[in-house]
Length: 334
Image (cartoon, rainbow, N blue to C red; front, side, top):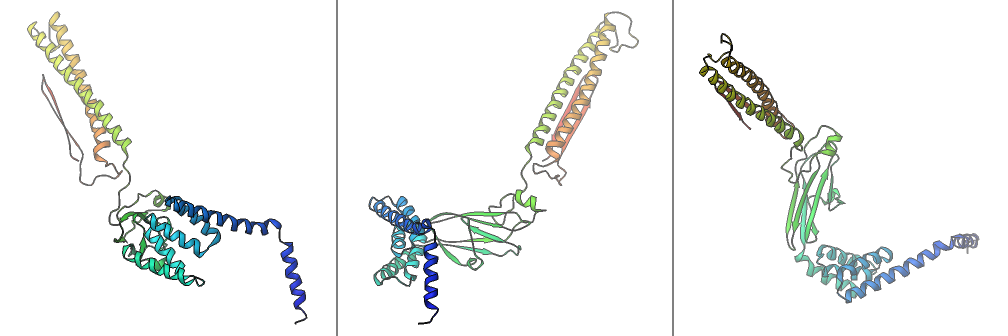
């Protein structure tokens, strides 16, 4: 025996004894908790409460990392139609070096049964965006997984991709057992800066990039302004009609319809009334036209996405007047 061996053995014993009692007891407690969780999972399986049983087995596996727990979890996954997870669990049972022959044979049998029922999702990336990060259902996809058909459980799966200075990509794919689906990430729209990238809209389809969100407040202000203008034009029309009536009264009373050159009397009073109402009608007409034009500019000339419309769309206002009538026409091209 080497003369230093007793010394090394004594040092190791002292280190073991010096470890805190709580640390040594924690290991025993964990083993006990893992066994209890495993037994609870088996009871739930017997009661056909498979979803709860799977959660118990998952918790037990985190503590025990046992082939027996792994096999029970694989069978539980099969019961809740998580075939991809079951297939992966059986693969782990098969790969464990200490697996007994019967456990290995069971794993091989289940793998063969599940293989034709598996759904597969392939994620391909053809964009050259630097710093690209791809996730499937919140889990980071490793570069060597890209372009490879990876088993997926039946149901919805969310594929996302992000890169500095690019808009976020997101696409949801739904698969049934036996399906094979491919998600292609071929474009991530470039944004101005990092702040814009964080606020940029999600592109559901990689070939479609949404425009910036609409700005409804400006459009509503435009509609309100134009509405007030239309009301003003309506008042102007009423005043014009009233002025025409007063002018006709003045003519019947011996006045020419204008206050200038009329003899004193009722005819002159009616002529003055006609003149004043005509002046007010003109003021309301000009103000109404200005409001309609301003409202139309806010609502029509600027699109809902905040960009100027290049097609020249806008507001058209036409006015025609006579001594007794006011005609206003408003039109817009979108």
